[in-house]
Picture: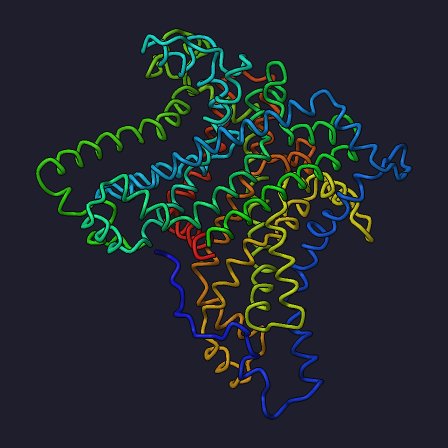
Length: 318
Length: 295
């Protein structure tokens, strides 16, 4: 491992002021003020960036969602932006598509990396090579990888890679991105290929932390491979599994570049429009930054709902 | 990630080193290695060689495995028509700046939060970590509005590299990673430096930073790849052709350019990150896992 952590010094959870900070020769208020000023001087650059580009925009997004700016004049409009957004014919399809993508990505992008990690963890050979392979697509610029899928893999004629494979196997070929039914599964496959490497590596690291004696004991009790996975591997990696599920939901709910590049945005019969794409459309093409901000707030509320459920579920298990 | 071959995993060493277990193990290994190579390297091979095919060859059925008549001209066209030199330079410039800004400002902040612990430090840290819960798409509109008219100073940052550099400093994950590393540096070292009369800056520079090279490397690599991979933000804040990043530039040209040339450009755009990965893969992987596992 490249990161070598210096051995941790035991420290009480309450973090008492470190013994050297109050030097005997210079105590008192002046010293304290100066110490604090130094501390804040080191913080100021990053804090300013957080203020301007993170905390303030968060508040401003909520404020904007209740305002309307026309010809340079900003007025309060109450819930108008929200009602207008919900009336947009693409609003419900966008949510349906986003949830569909998130669900499908959970099945494929969540279960697959876990079992890939379990498999890789059993290998005594070639592990380094396999690890590099799964992570390689993560390093590609998403635009590059998606053009590859768009032009070469999902080509609807038989010259496309996937159709050529299907044809060679005597299976029916597909129109891929031009068929409303295949659009989402095709996007999930591309997205999983691009992103699963990170999850595999994180699972691998957590699998290596499972004490071997647990497997030993389970085996002595006559547990087969599946029961060992169910009763040792999964409980031992439960926290990481739950954490990654949450992170993945948050990431996939923001589905944007896949529809933009693979489906030119909306896709066949609105089958690719995502909530994030709708934000982009409203904000930067329909000159409706306020509506886009309102949709952003709706997305935040939905994700906060997921987080609340997540906290509930994980708290219960502990 | 110690590769301890004796460590007990799901299946015991003895079970796979004899008889039937051994045959199954080796078959599975060969199948997985071949399968993974096909699934993860295959598309990249297809990409690199596909960009060498002529327009006719790309449309033929079934597709050919090797380009019959390689056309390096596609790569040359991509380089010239899309002005890739300029796009790559821009992206590289943004990436280097992002590394410098993040290293200086985030390291200073993490040092302060970890070692100097000024008043309200914990509140600030909590507010920073809270931003990890906010999805980027939610902030994109108000962030854009902020960048085109910065509050109080009223400066428009469109087409300015600061529009990429400064928002990236507000990266709670970096601060968390750095702070956790600094926390593991023993207080005694700090105390000794203070005894010798070193200032806080001096302690950071001469004691903390030399010990922190691995984590600084991880932060730098993540900063470079984040800039290289980012799409929507640079697309919004770098609207003119002269300031575009490489991903955005390829996307902008994709409509009116033959697809072989677009793919050739995509290959060229991917080369820098792939090289960075192959050189620094150990650091990247360990950074990824330390950041998430013990966190």
